[in-house]
Image 1 (cartoon, rainbow, N blue to C red):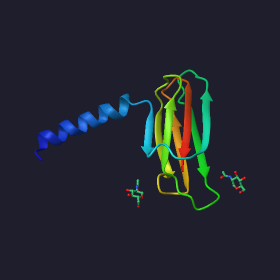
Image 2: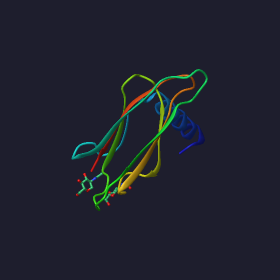
Image 3: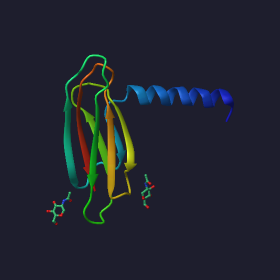
Image 4: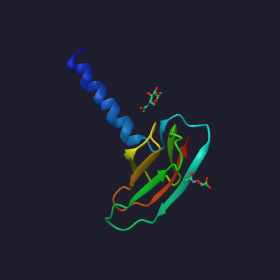
Length: 109
Ligand SMILES: *[C@@H]1O[C@H](CO)[C@@H](O)[C@H](O)[C@H]1NC(C)=O
Ligand SMILES: *[C@@H]1O[C@H](CO)[C@@H](O)[C@H](O)[C@H]1NC(C)=O
């Protein structure tokens, strides 16, 4: 692939990442094993941060993780540990500066 096309693809990817508010990882469906609604109010000039941790107490691995933006708050969602094919996951939510967080995090196995 030429350099131009690569740069173009990277730009498209960046735009996709930054405009996405609902995020899915892996396969959504199957059994919902855990869900948590994260609701944090806005504080001036502050990034609200929340970790959602789930750990299975058996050997069933995670098949899908979904983060739904309930309040159009456009947080950054990142898996910082485990994830699809693991028995545990840590999902990190970072609000925009000065904005609230209102997300529904769901884990499917
Ligand atoms: C862990 O196991 C117990 C007993 O089997 C069950 O009641 C509970 O819901 C399980 N917790 C999770 C997070 O899977
Ligand atoms: C999870 O495991 C399946 C089956 O081994 C594999 O096809 C898939 O690519 C894996 N997914 C990730 C995100 O590692």
